[in-house]
Length: 209
Length: 203
Image (cartoon, rainbow over all chains, first blue to last red; front, side):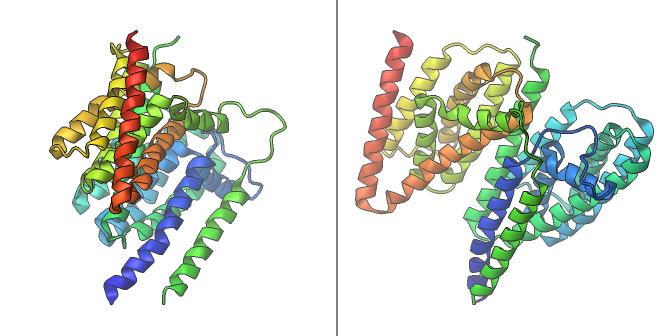
C-alpha cells in the first residue's frame, strides 16, 4: 500500500533530519566578519562560513522547513529564489559597505520560526517574497562584513551554493512528511527558532550593566 | 522493502556526520571563550533548578495526558512564551512574585496531572503561557553577561524543549492502566514538591 510505504520512509527519514539539525545546532561557532580559511579557496571559505554561522544558517533552515511544510512547489521556489537573492544581496553589500542593525537577524528568527510553528498556509507569491527578503537581508549583512571585494564575491558564491544545498536537503526531507507527529515535530522546531529569536531581541536591547 | 530507504538514510546520515567532522575547527590549546561554552551554559541553565525542571516535565506529562492537539500545542506554546518572559527580563521589565509564580506553576501543573484535568484547550494554553512567562522571566534575570547571546539562547531553548520531550516520553506509559496510575502519582509528587517550593518562596 502506498501510504504504508510513505509511512515507513518518513519514519526512517525523520531521525536523519533531527540528527542533522542537532548536529548543526551543536557545532556552530560564533559569527565571523571575515571568511574562515579552508585552504581550498574563497568559494569553499564562503561555504564553510555559512555552515559555521548560526545567524545565517538557522533562518535559512527555518525557511526550508516552512517551504517543505507547504509542499514541493514552495520548496522549488525557495530553492532557487533564496540563494539567488542571497548572492544579489551580498554583491550589494560588498558595494555599499553600510552596516545594518543585527536586530534584523533576530527578527528573521522570530518571523520565520513563528510561521513554521503556526504552519501558516502561505501562498506561493508570499513564499517568493519571504525568500527574496531573507536572502537579500542576510546576503547584504554577509556582503558588508566582507572587506575584500575580490574574494568576497567568490565567497558569496560559495554561500549561495551552501544555501541551495541546505534548502534542497531540508525541504526534500520535510515535503513527504504526512503523519501528524512528524509535522508537529517540524512545528516544534519552528517554535524553538522563534523562541531563540525572542531571546536574541532581548540580548540586543539589553541595557548595559 | 524498507531496507533500501533505511540504507539510503544511513548513508545520508553518515555523510552528514562525516561532513561535520571535516568541518570541525582546529583544536584549541586555550579554553574556548564564549562559543561552545555559551551553548553548554545555555543548555545547562534550565536544568539548574528543580522547580523549573519539574514544571517543564509536568507540561509534557499533561500535554501527553490530554492528547492531541494539546500534546503539541503546549510544547509549542511554552518555549515561545517563556522566551518572551526572558526577553522582558533582559529589557529590564520587572515582574513581581516570580518565585511564587514558579512554585504555583509546579503545584497547579502537578495537580492537573494528578487529577487528569481536562479543561478547554484555550484555557489550558493560556494557563501554561502564564506560567511560562514566570519561568522565562526568572531565567532572563539570571542570564549571565559575556556569553554569546545566540548560542546561549540556542542551548537554553533546546534544553527547555528536551525537558518537555522527557515529559511526553514518560507519558507513553499512559496507554496502560498501571501507567495512568503512575502518571497521576508523579503528578501528585510534582504538586507536593511545588508546595514545598511555594512554602520556601513565601516564608
